[in-house]
Length: 412
Image (cartoon, rainbow, N blue to C red; front, side, top):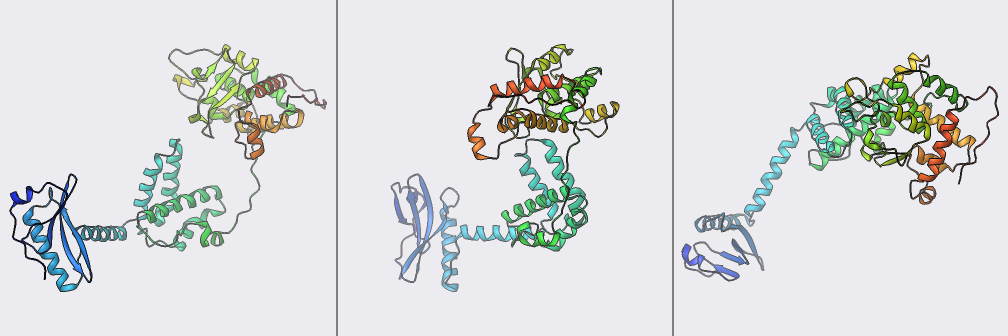
């Protein structure tokens, strides 16, 4: 039989100051527990040969009277059922039940929007966020959007992807990855259980099949014709022509040129430093500027209050289509700015002795080969400076038809 303890008053209970467990009466097994600065109520119940303490809450949140009421109710529950559920466990069970109920009504679109919101923090380019939403809205939401995320099957996902898997494979592949990410999020939140229906490692690879595609090449000028092209380009007026020429001389990407700012240019060091946030690889890139590139920059008009090196009208950044339109005006529709990077690589690889890692650094490519990466721990700026100077010289020379190309012995 439990010992009978006289009911203590609130003042008597408050008088306990030292660490310990104190029976307060008014309900069998009710104790005040003091541990450091903490004061809380516990109910001691004997289960078989062991005693179990059930937390009833802190003294700040639960009064003595409420603690006695809770203790009496839990003891009665235990005597009737042989089971006692603490208030904390009860709250946890209710939360689980509410979460389960919520999961039954959670739609794919709701989970997708929450996934996008989370990924917005990690995507450095706002365009990627817009692409995420655009592909889901266009292809996934019409079929999956209003479905309960826990009820969607591989058949549903296949129905979304199959119509564009062959005709728009790049888009379909990205869409599948984004749908998979939404289901991963839903599983992490316990909105669905089981395998991810969009995962390739499951049955989706077999369902969709492999797509054999010819590699896509960017239209490029043969390196033996680059001198003639640059000569023609230099005769054309306009900011877009100067921007394209600068891009050719530096072997950089269209966006890097269009977004170039004057504070990135160091005329004294003949260096253009592109910050990490503007680079495809997310890493700062230093571009050595040849004498022709420096002369081009110095000849450009400077617009007060505009930091862009190659501004469009009203000081804005040039459109992504500016060079495509220039190629059309030049009668060279089909060319791409990326193609000139291929021209540079072909010239450097076939007519010079510069090591591959120097050429790849000049193109701001990450080295996948571990041995090359270990060799090129720095950015090989000195060697790249000589390379870009040789390239500028070559671009300024119109090759005669059927002329033999003399290899330039670049420093290793």
